[in-house]
Image 1 (cartoon, rainbow, N blue to C red):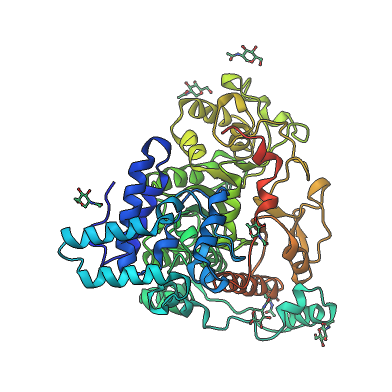
Image 2 (cartoon, rainbow, N blue to C red; image 1 turned 135 degrees about the vertical axis):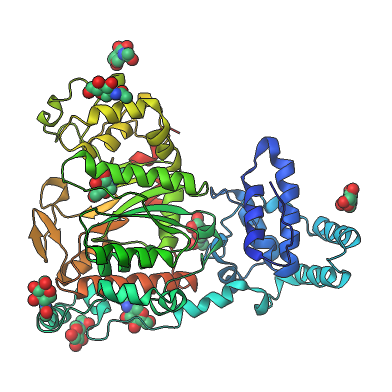
Length: 530
Ligand SMILES: *[C@@H]1O[C@H](CO)[C@@H](O)[C@H](O)[C@H]1NC(C)=O
Ligand SMILES: *[C@@H]1O[C@H](CO)[C@@H](O)[C@H](O)[C@H]1NC(C)=O
Ligand SMILES: *[C@@H]1O[C@H](CO)[C@@H](O)[C@H](O)[C@H]1NC(C)=O
Ligand SMILES: *[C@@H]1O[C@H](CO)[C@@H](O)[C@H](O)[C@H]1NC(C)=O
Ligand SMILES: *[C@@H]1O[C@H](CO)[C@@H](O)[C@H](O)[C@H]1NC(C)=O
Ligand SMILES: *[C@@H]1O[C@H](CO)[C@@H](O)[C@H](O)[C@H]1NC(C)=O
Ligand SMILES: *[C@@H]1O[C@H](CO)[C@@H](O)[C@H](O)[C@H]1NC(C)=O
Ligand SMILES: *[C@@H]1O[C@H](CO)[C@@H](O)[C@H](O)[C@H]1NC(C)=O
């Protein structure tokens, strides 16, 4: 637990140490507060407005926040500048550490004390800080807001040139028809594997030209890293667009490239991963065969690698190259915080064809097998259980003998509450639009509760989205959508990119808010093992 070393140097590191402080509660409250106030202190030396930013990593609402906001008479503009800890509507979201800053006088006292004991913090810096804190009500000097420099990410115009995505999302049939026609007639433009191999020789240029966001953007996101696995086989261009859409420096990404993939696919992905500290390839590649254990293996490997490489991430989400987010990282973080540890894994007993389990005999440890989607959103402890718990190992061993092990393993763990896995579901393991919706993926199977009109084309039941599906996608509450083909009605993916870019920008600028209430009240969130 280090309270930072050279605070004048690295604001990032500073925030991190504040983060540690923020996690201590009750027993360590006092200690946490001290650390936090020192953190705030150091930080405030550099960015004086930070007194507000370091509030809290407990995102549950609290009456203090209102008090806090009122006390400093924060204006909407200030809140926007202060970023994610401030609600965009004049309410400060953050909470418990507010106590620290409640009392300006004590901060001032500590600041003064520091200037007496630490030679590198000069009297001048301290008095400047104090004046900024005191003058907080009226002014925030722009130069002290480090978020300002992030505005560069939103200067570029990523609008699709040929059509108005806005009109398409709004369901304008004329525009839609136009997009379908253009897509039919014009080239499918994308970067090829060899383009990536070449481009990634100069990483800085690559990141810049491809518009990667190399900042967490908000403090809330910085303190809530997400781990992703990405399984791909071909079409690096499309997978890279997905990666770029979900990329943030605080997150972590494990990529598995199929053993069967051509060499240039492997090289291209290697090139991309070499340009980022937090994107890595699995040390071995499996030859993935549908319906067998090999579908599960890369995923387990990724979980293990992600687990070992970083202790910070809070949730794990698995992706394939043909998916695309329906939510920005900013929104994802708020949704996952609203989940409060709940896992979102689909499951059913009723819809399961039991013969898939017959070969394997009775599952060990009294586990009732369920069938479910392979897409998961799970908390860190779930991943811990999967890779480290002996019961999970036994059960995994059992799934080796079932058909479609990947559709059995994760879902069964999540629907056997007697195992006590954090975030698993205590109710009936049946997907239900109200009680237990499945929000990890929007997937249009054309069947039962997963049936929507498909304006694209159906490939093995699943709707490959066309331009005409965009209005529906726009309104969906799910986290990601499956599936897109880059070379089928290309504006479907192009417009999704534009939309996510816009939303990220508008949220950053405080022009758009996100309300996670719907997610907080879900049945699987309320009825979970905590
Ligand atoms: C502001 O946002 C908070 C949190 O999202 C919400 O609880 C509150 O009701 C909102 N206040 C107003 C005035 O809209
Ligand atoms: C000032 O710092 C010293 C040593 O760091 C500490 O013992 C003392 O309690 C501090 N005083 C105040 C008012 O914080
Ligand atoms: C994205 O933002 C740009 C610039 O404000 C706007 O022209 C465009 O219509 C927006 N696109 C969507 C899909 O909202
Ligand atoms: C629909 O899009 C067309 C262009 O494709 C535009 O001329 C028309 O004004 C749009 N209609 C509405 C209602 O926005
Ligand atoms: C785009 O690619 C798809 C699949 O390869 C092909 O069917 C389609 O004709 C292509 N479209 C154009 C306009 O080149
Ligand atoms: C298995 O579950 C049944 C019924 O829920 C219970 O009676 C039995 O004791 C359990 N067996 C073990 C080994 O946990
Ligand atoms: C993630 O997705 C892949 C492919 O859809 C699937 O095979 C795998 O089992 C999934 N992983 C998890 C953890 O569910
Ligand atoms: C895995 O299951 C097989 C039977 O299917 C059994 O022989 C073997 O001992 C089990 N291995 C472990 C590690 O439990």
